[in-house]
Amino acid sequence: FRRVLFRSASALAQVLTYGRRIHAKGITFRVIGRKEVARYASHGIDLKAWEGIHALVANDGAVVTVYRNHDLNGIRKTRAPRQKHGLH
Image (cartoon, rainbow, N blue to C red; front, side, top):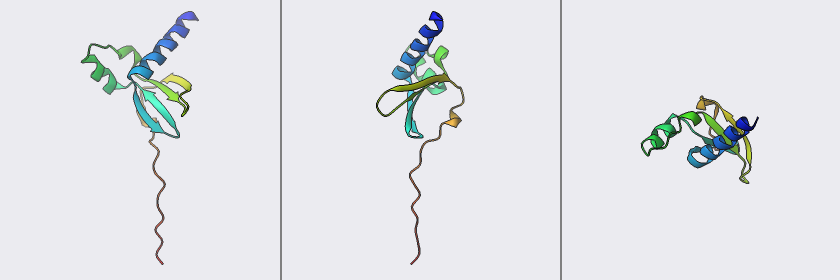
């Protein structure tokens, strides 16, 4: 149990430090994907073990949950509401 707790805390620290921010569905996703692994590898930082980690962060900064998913397509950016143009 301690190992799982340590890995979770370590994953959270990595994703909050190096993860990309995506604002969608009224919440902020912090994600370590292939692009982040490649970008930071050129600086000598190895994030391969953390690839696919997502952290959902509320507007007040509280971490809602942390999970692993290699598919980023499920995150859809929120769109501005469509304007209705009526003909008078």
